[in-house]
Each structure stands twice: as structure tokens, then as C-alpha cells.
Length: 134
Image (cartoon, rainbow, N blue to C red; front, side, top):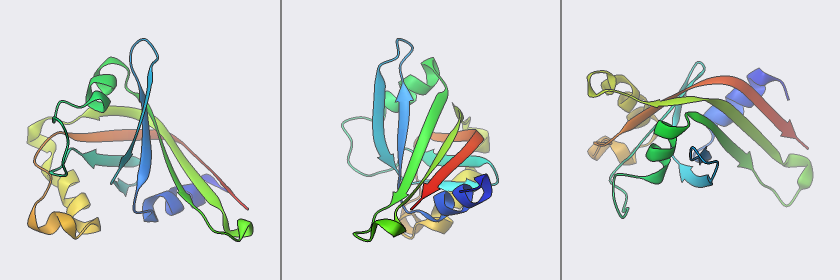
């Protein structure tokens, strides 16, 4: 799969897994909703139930901004299997620049139309797109 096809399949996916690691290398993996513009992937801490908005993924990004996202498609017909990975450097955006990335999320997910994300917004500059298909 070319990097361009990996980006297109990733961008069209509804959910991805975000991998972060602490400064000491302890991995953390969570599902995220996201939006893609060019080589930027954004996600936000939204209103879905969580124990806190001070999440491990945000602490890990502060300690170690290297992250990886994975989106995939499964089928019982294994010739239709695919995955797309985006590797990059993440940062929590300051409040002054969060409106545009939040609008990308609202455009992709109708669930955000009534209640856009109100908490931290993270932008990741992707340096490598990879993928595979059966």
C-alpha cells in the first residue's frame, strides 16, 4: 500500500487506536475518534464517560510526544483485510487554536454537532504513513 492510500484509508476510518508511551517507555493504547487534514491527525478529549479529563494519553504525550495511530478493516474474507498506520509527533494545542481542529471533528462525527469536544485537543504531525492490504 502506498503512503497516499494508507492516508486515505486511515482518514476514512471511523475509529483508530492511539499508542503512546510514558517517558520510561510504558505503553498505553486507547481507541480514539479523529480527523485528518493533510498530514495532521487531530483528536480531542470529549464528553464520553471517563474517570477524569487528565488522561494518561495526555501525560504520555507531554513526556514523550512520539505517537502511533492504527486503523484497520477486518473481514471474514481475508483478501479484504487492511491496516493503515500513522506515526508522528503529537502536541496538545493551546486554546487559542483549537476551534479549527474541533470543526474538523464536528464535520466527521454527527455526535459532536450537539456537543463539540470541550477539553484538550491534540494535533499530531504525521511523518510516516504505512499500510498493508490482503
